[in-house]
Length: 287
Image 1 (cartoon, one colour):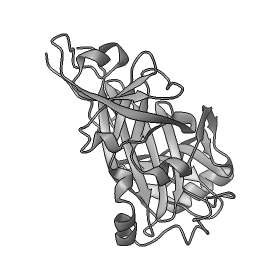
Image 2 (cartoon, rainbow, N blue to C red; image 1 turned 90 degrees about the vertical axis):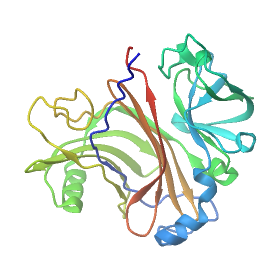
Image 3 (cartoon, rainbow, N blue to C red; image 1 turned 180 degrees about the vertical axis):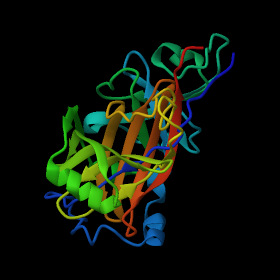
Image 4 (cartoon, rainbow, N blue to C red; image 1 turned 90 degrees about the horizontal axis):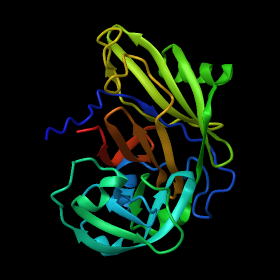
């Protein structure tokens, strides 16, 4: 069987973080929470020592998408809507001959990987979560509430265009995080063959970006995702969580496409950018 993994041809997730009116006691302000890149990296090693995982059809178990160095150290699963679930390591599952290669709930028992059991409550079946071993990250996770896409305000559009020095073609509000953060999906105007589409989390005072530039090959061609025909869509994104940590903001999101779903764990620092700490991919296109 040929597995035709979806290309992330290039897309931009811009993440704009503002002041949180009620951060943990260890977080003093935006300036206090954004150390230099090297300091943030040194302070946050445990955050990335986890794995993205997907949920089985019962909502009671998760299968890690990548190998976990010390699976017994995993403490919880961080899922969309700020759902934090305690987990324990169950077993290392071997691949079954019936495995069709798709990382979906109906094929859960056939795939190889580390299996974790949720010890209280359940997760949404077939969703992606982040398995975390960092108790501080788990304690400081705050929900991001997804919504039907709504056109951005003129003020939001003006702010994003000024920040990127690029005209905004489309902009939608797709979620809220904390109380004063808005999650936006944005498509900017092409510059020659350079295309840019973004997620933007907008706060009152500060902007933090995570860019995925793309090459525009013409109308009808794939630009950001396979079969997108050069058109960026606000749908397919899910913000798993935003956490205000002493060394920076940590955020995780998933982005579904025609052939699969990509996931990223991000960390902000003083360069006003989010950096990728971990990433994964779920393949689910028909064989």
